Amino acid sequence: MAVTADDLDVAVSTTIDTLRPAADRDWSVVAEALQHTCWQAAEHIGDTLMAYAANIGARATTHYVRFMASADKDASPADVLEFTEAGGRMLVAMVRVSGPDVRAFHPSGMADPAGFAGMGCVEALVHGYDIADALGLALDPPRDVCTRVIARMFPEHAGDLAGIDAWRALLWAAGRIELPGRPRRQGWRWHGAPIG
Image 1 (cartoon, rainbow, N blue to C red):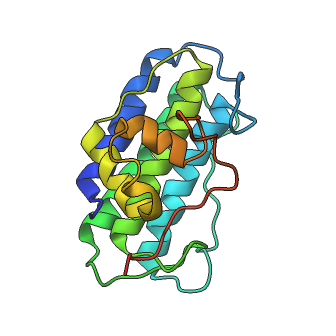
Image 2 (cartoon, one colour):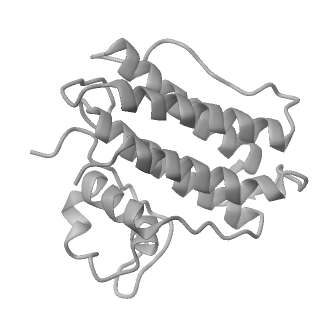
């Protein structure tokens, strides 16, 4: 089940739209799962999504493209959210214009555009959840996007998670929550390379 540029666009929009109303709050609070502040977590999302876009664009095969993207240290929460959104939209654009045969480096395997879209969705939604949780907000992404992300990024769990709310299932797969009869995952990894 392919994750698309449209799915990634929805994931980025969901995260930004959820967090933007809290831009006047204190983003120095720690997002517990990351042990980073909310500000640092938002910067991480933007940096990571820009790095994914750069790797696809350069067709890097052995490493990440050598650059570092960071928000200005005096950036407000609204500014760092803009940075996050910019990274997301760059990855959306790169996934959209890259053919399915394109491959680029990721430590989890040489990934195709659908893999990078899936990784981008996990980054945006799960770290968006981390920030939202720390700020007392609720992130509520579309379940069809979550279902496609689980099938693509966590294929070994897709079948046995089918009867569970897809957002809760994605949070479990990414080590954020427990599910009944399933302890919180530690040391989890996703499947970056194309399946099969």
